[in-house]
Amino acid sequence: MASMLDIKNLTVSYGAIEALKDVSLSVEEGSIVAILGANGAGKSTLLKTISGLVKPRAGSIVLAGQKDLVGMYPYRIAEQGVIQSPEGRLILQGLTVEENLLVGAYGLKGRGGKSKRQIISENFEEIYALFPILKERRTQQANTLSGGEQQMLAIGRALMASPNVLLLDEPSLGLAPLIIRDIFNVISRLREAGNTILIVEQNAFQTLKIADYAYVLELGKVNMQGPASELIHDEGLVEAYLGGQRA
Image (cartoon, rainbow, N blue to C red; front, side):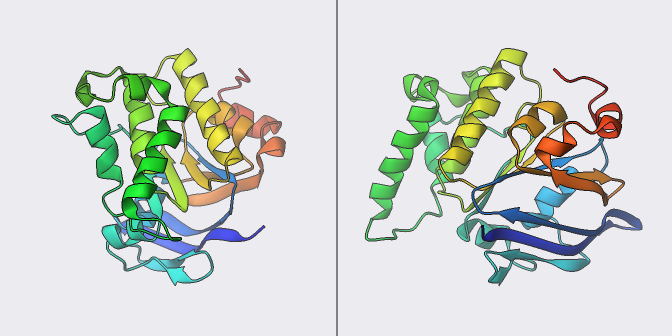
């Protein structure tokens, strides 16, 4: 399968502190790749660097074997189809659910013989099929949604951009166990529909259950990597990052 995102020798510094040190990883088209690690390992810095919010000191981030994203402005990277659903959801207060979703489609352009309006209409249908509660609440003020509903909205907003690569930063953060299960089920369905996903998550065990491949960051370096189906049975990983828990 073709690689959608190739990161090579990425180094990111905050002053004298190196947050990422010579990180290399690859995300195959149509796969879920997980980034695991303790707080401060550099996981969110990695996503912010891919999105252009943080500038690397060295390294490359190549999309679909063609375009190096390093040096591009964030909006240009978004135009290339690399879209992030941020940690904390960042729902736009004062806008309805549907208006929040429309914000995600701001940079869309017509393609494949379809107008921007047609693509937006199709994206709405797909997102409302994934998250029926959002359709029910489409005229409701987004800030009045529950935490789980806001997370669904944040993912839906990212999907409105028709991403080539969907970056998910801690999608289960602060959610109840039943809602977390629903969110991970949706992420699995997105992969089944052909989406390419790079996910950062504290809920390592649940993430490994749905991921194809995983990288473990420790102090800004890739400490371990491999198929998720193998890492989930690695006793050292379980003890270090899953707290010994398998459920």
